[in-house]
Image (cartoon, rainbow, N blue to C red; front, side, top):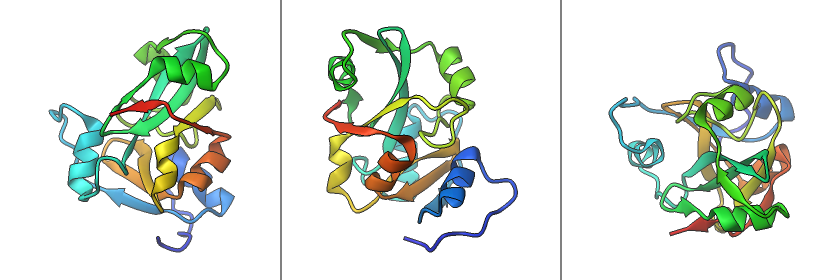
Length: 165
């Protein structure tokens, strides 16, 4: 992992938040293909990283409250497990427009970091099995690599088994 980068103008809210927190991270950029069927799988392939180390940020609604789920792109989100992880009863995927409006990011570029409104966040427990993971840096074609522990600390996330392969 790279040393803390100097604050750069033109950074995303996610990279600015990481820099301000003094957290070690590495930014990976790639050419995003608008026709790609899966943003996460595209990122894993472009970066040459295993799909179980690249995590997608999904926004769900648990008992009426928006909640962020961060799961490997190699799998899918278990909505029942997500609800249980935050003490809720029922979870559904959030309306994409509400997710974009609340986080300040566009679909395919939603980062768990630097969101407009801080939401409850659950990070799949599998993240702990890797020295570093990659998540969106706040726009399509840009990923940030950091430790799962740092991501959890900065987002207030809890770890739970919410992903399915």
